[in-house]
Image (cartoon, protein in one colour):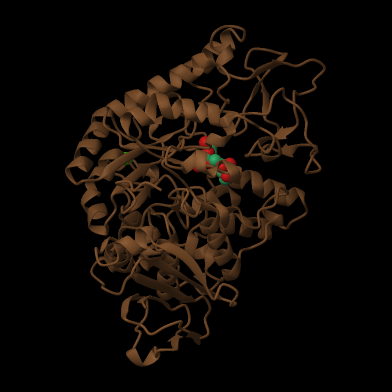
Length: 558
Ligand code: TEU
Ligand code: CA
């Protein structure tokens, strides 16, 4: 694998709507982000990905774009965007935007024109089918519930495809004219100085055609889109064309949101000449998921988490550089998901940080993760914003789950968990806004906020800073960035440990992933303790073993 400029960086995801509100309207915005660039620099973030801020009706919080060339006034202006790019550059930071091109908004000009003339130029930008006797072209289920077909506004017998929300009509990538529109837009943004993109839901752009039913996987007679994706062939033709027409000529950094990739295609996706620079590891995220819905999901244990991480590491090997996360704007907070219920505290949060941050690949921090933000309680479905959660809540109730349990599922898995405002301090709305926040603030903001951690050397925040500094430390960076990852004690219950090995240097990352203390064997004496989330006295590690407190992690040069 060729070395790249970004391999030693730290990446950070900003969900603009919930990051920092600069004008008191309760919605995070670009000027808010600009005002926090020095904070992000202090943390050690280098690459910043912004979730969508384009013009949008926000049916799916901006992942439904109505104008790819304009910033939504709620978030600011194009001048603000240019200022952010310029200010980031001054700080040696890189800005990525979200490339959402599997679909646009039903309020996009293209879709409006398609409704006027379904058989014309713009009708061909979408999948529009004539439906006779009410039989839909296929029985796929939208990711957000219900059929993927809705009637085309103004037409009785025409339906359009949307694998996501009905306000997100799928763009027809089989149409070269549509693809040209996309490439022009991408180049326009890259010419403005963007460092690249995070690429949304991109595996969905290639459908298995012609449309056909797959065996129903629920009582509703519908089937998960993923059953179709397994059969879809040729996505690489589109991805390779997009890379060659846009990313490559700009030497852009790109990271794909890829689910359902085929293992044999990994070199094509993230190899040295891959479609993307990187892609996210979602093994931990999809673990235990059921097509039946959240009420049938299997919660993940520490051993499951470890096995998922190692499965990805084994799969990727030296093919490319995977992007590692514990959460994002679609997922619950990592510390609430991967640490056994009731055990999330500063020590265990730092342990989890150590484990994911030092595996091979590009480490990503999602806004608020660096201060240990947790899932938020849900009192009623009325206070839930996430369309995915609302659908899953209904599915659970329909399956006979009690309302209390259905709400608990939303607390456990809902996307609002990652979208409650960043907790800057213990003031009004956690310092996120001087106004009324668009979404409820996690009531634990008085205990978990940046201000209370920033100057505390033992805080979760400063532990993340130590991790970032360690990974960039020239004494260890070659090993921590490029060193081979070799699992250690991988069948030991509630242990996660791995070597990072480069010629002449071996670093052991070892964690006791449970409350009870334990002593674990060491393969050779400790030369240096590089980091630990709890005090690690010399007496606790001899040549043959190391004693670890509950949820203690240690990074040891051996
Ligand atoms: O998510 C793509 C995706 O895989 C979704 O099916 C995801 O599993 C779902 O959102 C979980 O509820 C991307 C974006 O990250 C997400 O925020 C958008 O809602 C979605 O695409 C549509 O753009
Ligand atoms: Ca605002």
